[in-house]
Image (cartoon, rainbow, N blue to C red; front, side, top):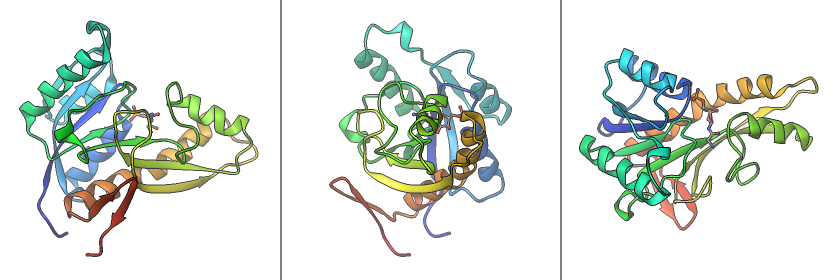
Length: 209
Ligand code: GAR
């Protein structure tokens, strides 16, 4: 793989399967980066246990300990800066993070649907798959995008699809989409590490090797 290994900070709120996938790929040499710190927005988030098991430093910053999104975001930024990352990845992070201008183009999010459909405030986790099934979609998937201080809005980097089956439940669809998420996030991160992502307005150009 061309380019240097990057330093990555992960933000999460839940069980941390997204983080675990990245840690596994880091261990097998397939991720062009190292997770150097993990912030959990809930003290009980199992993703924090996964991080500690892998020897990654962790920190808890809870939204409910801050009066508003600005002060919550400022606390996140302060901790992130201490780890001096090249890239910040939201890995099942269910809060809004208002990043400072110097982080623009350095924060990625993964969403379990094909944006711009089925995104935005309140549309996260199992709510997404319930909405996709209720709408009668025949295809779903996942989106990795740069974050832009709004929910699920920034320039799209990678999208992978998954079929919707007649007998799907939100759980079975979530599982099929997660398989694609496990491919999409490392793909986007490695492209970033290789310096191959160029943001032009809301379009991300993928540069050749
Ligand atoms: C993943 O499917 C991720 O795409 C989704 O939550 C799950 C986290 O699983 N994220 C969102 O819905 C964000 N809008 P995990 O906690 O086991 O990694």
